[in-house]
Length: 240
Image (cartoon, rainbow, N blue to C red):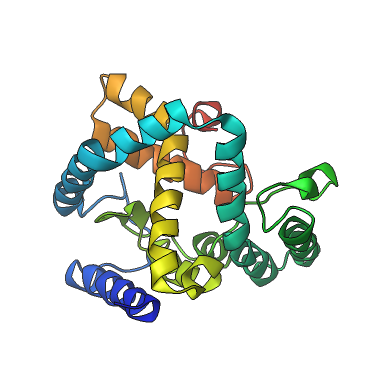
């Protein structure tokens, strides 16, 4: 399967998943999780996959890869995905941030050696976090029902279409499959390693791990969409 077919497969899956579950973009009252039964099934599947394969590899990666190398790997993949940040800044009307983001991308792609280093931060061009889910939120779209997407993880009716759009704005998905697939594996392991601290906290917590993951995700998304101002009645500092 080539890269284009893979992207279309994800598009089709997300569409069918939302369609068969009767999802819509309106706000949902209460815990925002009317699909909890199905979500828990997918959460269990994802957790099983993670514990069996992804987490052990991420722990080995964290334990045996020097921090400067891990940092370079993270920088490289962040830079490949950064065009999406630029586009979403512009779509949200943050034109100044869009220009800064463009400058950051160009500096790190050249002086930073294809993004392995991050000289842009030292030049005052800070890394920003913007995505299509945040753009829809800025345009007034409600959060919609909470979703757990198989393999991918936590999402929502508003955020799920953004997962598809990010496939088209991340430069990683425009290389040959023989190169892209190994890079996706490395990116997945690197990102999973970054989450080890919070998942260890979850595993040690007496709370229901599903609820812990759901509420942490929703709080984090609210924090990002509202530029640091959460609408949920949680303690922001616990989730930053």
